[in-house]
Amino acid sequence: MTAFLTREHRIEWGQCDPAGIVFAPRFIDMFAESTILLFEAAGLPRKRDMLAQLGVVGFPLVDLSARFGFPASYGDVVTIEADAPQFGGSSFTIAHRILLGERVCVEGTEKRVWTVPAPDRPGGLQSARVPDEVRSRFIC
Image (cartoon, rainbow, N blue to C red):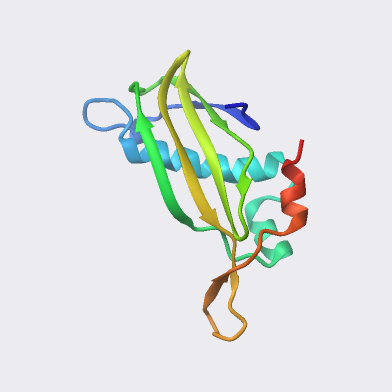
């Protein structure tokens, strides 16, 4: 995987189970935060501003896979990598890795759908094609 975004993260006490290792769902939270930071790193506005400027309601998670390899513990500093999105029509998939040194703690993918207000249903939502202005930010 060639990461589009790489960041360091210190494991906090609240991310750990009673044994002091990261509770598996907290790794998934790290994936989700990296997705937001990935869009910012590509030059898009912060999420709140992006939602307002691009007319998107959000990009909910519709599929997730994760493979756990090595535990991380309270106080560890892990490296989180997120690859550029692979775009479908209204969906995109992002590959993530979280490493402790050279060891892979977890790797996985998120599939999300670009969601906008449904014009025919007040308060409703519908998927929409990811805008070209977003897609073009990730072309190398």
